[in-house]
Image 1 (tube, one colour):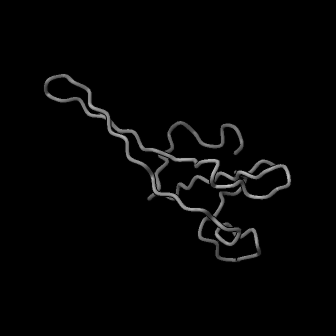
Image 2 (image 1 turned 180 degrees about the horizontal axis):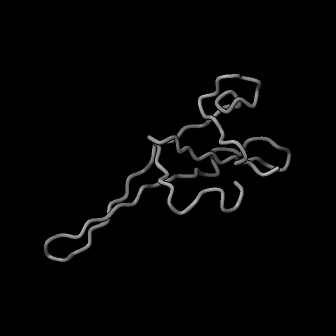
Length: 90
């Protein structure tokens, strides 16, 4: 992702098209063994109760393993996830 690609006024949400993709490969460009663990994303929210107590909530965000087809890297003209023009580093 290019630095400062998004402005501070933009709202980034899944229902607005936000998708986060992370690719982990070993030195031979092969996917890492799932036994090494996983990368999990959580949504954090909070509320202030009438008593003044602050309560925090954490919700794990659903994820899945993507394929090259999902992003159109294999020539697919209608990928599930469309990358924003100019978002990738060259």
